Image (cartoon, rainbow, N blue to C red; front, side):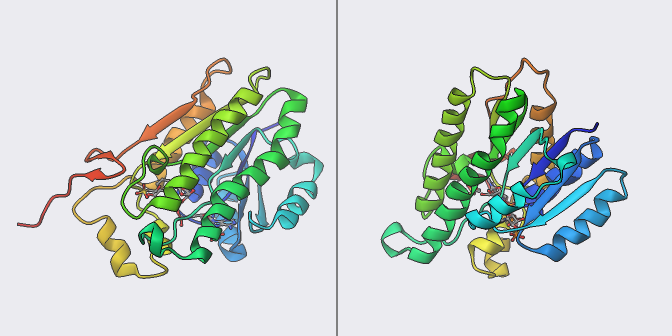
Length: 254
Ligand code: NDP
Ligand code: 8X3
C-alpha cells in the first residue's frame, strides 16, 4: 500500500506545493483547507498523476469539524504516515499597541490551536502503530520578532515550542517530528496579511528573489524521506539574500 500524507492548507502556496511534491513522490494524499472548489481542482490535477486523493474541506479552527473529518476517514485512509501542519496565516503588520483583536484571535486560533487540534487528532494512531512523521511549518519569524510581527512571530515561536514538546513526548516511539522554518516565500501569504491589498503584498517581494512553495516542499519531502533512524528536527530555509527575519538585501532599480 502507498504511504499517505495529510496536508493542511493545501489550497494555496506551500501546502499546495507539498501536495504536488508528495503525490509526485508516490504518496496518496489527503488535502485539506476551507475552499472546497480549490481542493476539488487540485484533487483532479493530482489524480492525473495516478495517486489516490481525498479532499476534506474544513476549517482547522473549528474543532468539531476537524474532529468529524478525521473520525470520518474511510478505513483505507486511516493510516496517515505524514501529517503536514501547514495551514496558517499572518494578519496585519501594526505595532502591538495598535493591533486588531480579531486578527490576533485568528492567527492564534489557526497557527497554534488549529495545529494542536490536528496533532491531537492524528498522532494517536501513529503512536499506536509506532510509525509516522509530523512536519510543522514554523517560520524564521519564530526565531526572533521583527517590526510589526509581534503576534504572528509569537505564534511561530509557539509552533517551535509545541514541536519540540511533541518530539520529547514521542522520543520513546519511532514517530518523528520536524519543524520546517521558511523565510520569505512568495505565496498568497502577503495578500492575506494585508487583507487583499495586492499592491502592498507585491512590495514585500520587490528587489529580491524569494523562495517558492516548491522550494519548501522539496525540504519537507526530504525530511519525510530520510532513513527511519534519522530525525530532521528543524530546518531554517532562507532566500539567498535573506539573513534573518529582519535582514533582507534588496536590489534597488538603477
Ligand atoms: P497561503 O496564504 O498561500 O496559504 C495558506 C493556506 O492555509 C491556504 O491553503 C489556506 O486555505 C490555509 N488556511 C488558512 N487558514 C485556514 C484555516 N482556518 N483552516 C484551514 N486552512 C486554512 O500562505 P503560505 O503557503 O505562505 O502559508 C502556509 C504556511 O507557511 C503558514 O503556516 C505560514 O505561516 C507559513 N509560512 C509562510 C511563509 C511565507 O513567506 N509565505 C514563511 C514562513 C512560514 P483556505 O484559505 O482554503 O482555508
Ligand atoms: C512568514 C515569513 O517574512 O513573516 O513566516 O517572516 S515572514
